Image (cartoon, rainbow, N blue to C red; front, top):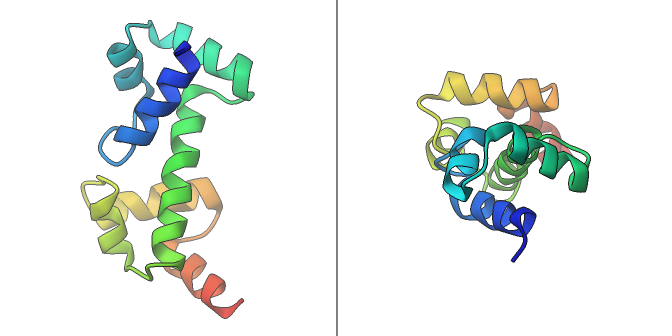
Amino acid sequence: MSGIQLFRSSVEAHFRTHHDAGYYADALGFAPRTLTRAVQQVTGRTAKAYIVERIVLEAKRLLAHDRVTAARCASELGFPDTSNFSLFFQNATGMRPGAWQAATLLD
């Protein structure tokens, strides 16, 4: 399995508890810059951006399909509190989780 495949598998297995690229670099035996360059070369995104996209995808799934609250979503995705998760989600999507969920449920 290539380093990128290992990275993707590791992110899939641990994105709920580990949100930083440094964790994955250490786990895979890479320097953080080396991992980021390799991920960027293959995906066009930094390792951190790849992780953020995976967390946001799961957050959207939980909010839209499981219809969980932002607090529950934060807990399930390993955020220390709801406000931390809400800020993360808003930075990534441009909307607060509750507003995104409401807009999605109206569609």
